[in-house]
Image 1 (cartoon, rainbow, N blue to C red):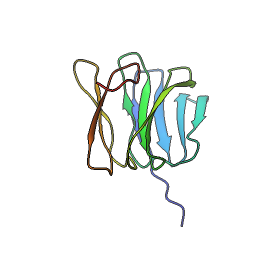
Image 2 (cartoon, helix red, strand yellow):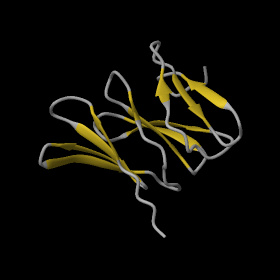
Image 3 (cartoon, rainbow, N blue to C red):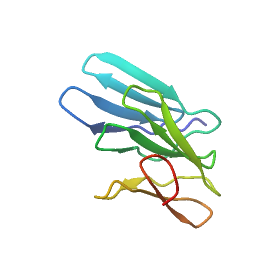
Length: 114
């Protein structure tokens, strides 16, 4: 059975992001801007979008992945368990995400642990 989850987030009037089971996608109306393959693990959570347009998503590969607005890898942070929950971004720019290891991770915008 293939699981396909799709969440669309309006970032601006020109750009929308969509997350599917194994990739993160960005598209302007009528065109594909980029697609980033989540290697070694699908993501079941909705992405969070930072103020700079970066996308943050968890995966079953025990990590949080950050993707730059141009579709390139920004960073990834290994967790002690799969990440099924959607990341949240605080007003201070800190990324918060829970993992199956029963820990809440607080990550700086550069991918380091808070």
